[in-house]
Image 1 (cartoon, rainbow, N blue to C red):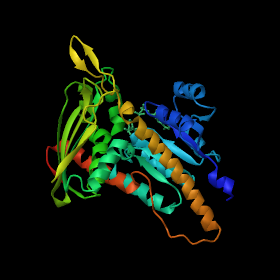
Image 2 (image 1 turned 45 degrees about the vertical axis):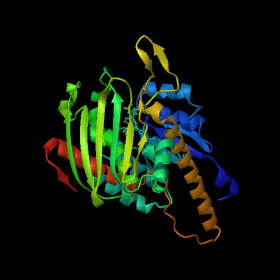
Image 3 (image 1 turned 30 degrees about the vertical axis):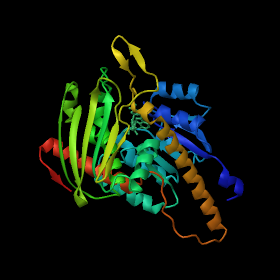
Image 4 (image 1 turned 180 degrees about the horizontal axis):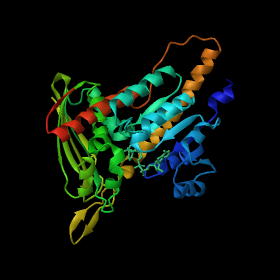
Length: 361
Ligand code: NAI
C-alpha cells in the first residue's frame, strides 16, 4: 500500500435511507473529514430519489448485494431494520468491507454470537455498533469525572430513553422489526450502564410495562412505556425507563449515583438556549427527537469510525513493510462483544416483560 493509499479517503456505502439513514448519509457526505459517500442503497424509490437530489453523486443501488459487489467501496454503513443487521454485517465482512451498523447488533443472542465468530475471521476489518452515547460530549465528560473518582464508587444508574409521541403511529409500524421497546430504546441505557460499570456482568433482570396510547403494539407483544431493573455483579443496580409517548419531546437522560456524589447527564433537555417568556410563564422548547439531542454524538461517532479505518490501513502498511507490530484489538465505541451483551440483557428484559417473572442471566 502506498502512502497515498494510506491517506486515501474511506469510501462508504450507506444502506437504508429512512429516518436515521438520511442523517448518517448527510454527515458522511458533508461533515466527516476523510470520508467519501460513494454509494447509497435503499429498496424504496422515494429514498433513492432523495439520495440523487441530496447527496453528492453517489452510485445508487436498489439491492444490498449489488452495493457489496462494488469494489470501490471500503466500508458499509448499515441503517436498516434491526431484524436485518446480523446477516447484513456478516455479508459485509465476507465481502471484505469494514462495517458500521446501527444498534442493536441483532434481536437474537445466537445471531450476535454468529456475527462475533465471523468477525474473528476478519480481524483487519473494523466492525462497530452505533451506540452513539459513547461519543456524546456530556456522557464522555461524566464518564471521565466518574473514572477520576468524582462520585466515589458508582453503584446505581438511572437512565431513560423516551421519545415524543407520534400520533401518526410510526412506532406501531416500526415495532415488528424493532425487537420491542427494551431492545430498541433501553438497549442504549443498558450500554451506558455496562460502560459506566466497567463491563460488569448483569445477573438478573425485572421488567414491566403498559400501553398508554398505542393499542396497535399489543399484537407484537410490545408496550409504549416500559420500566426495568437490572442487577449487576458487585451489588450494582440500574433502573431504566423507556417511553414512546412523551408529550414534550425526546427526553433522554441518565444519572450515575456513587458513594460520594452523583452525576446527571442531559436532565432538562432544552432544544437550545432560548427562554420563552409569555403569559404561561418562562419555558424552553425540548429536543424534538433523538437526533437533535445526539447530533454531535452521531457526527463524532462517524468521524471516529473513519479515522479508525485509516489507522488500520496505516498499520497494515507498516506491517507490509516488515515491521512486526503487536496485535492490537483497539476498537472505537461499542465493540461487537459490548453489543452482544446489550442484546442479551435486552432479550432478558423482553422475556421478563412477557412472563412477569425475574430472569436470571
Ligand atoms: P426506518 O424504517 O425509517 O428506515 C429503515 C431503512 O431501511 C429504510 O430506508 C428502508 O428502505 C431500508 N431497508 C429496509 N429493508 C432493506 C434492505 N433489505 N436492504 C437495504 N435497505 C433496507 O428506520 P430508522 O428509524 O431509520 O432505523 C434504522 C435503524 O437505525 C434501526 O436499526 C434502529 O434501531 C436504528 N436507530 C438508531 C437510533 C439511535 O439512537 N442510534 C435512532 C433511530 C434508529
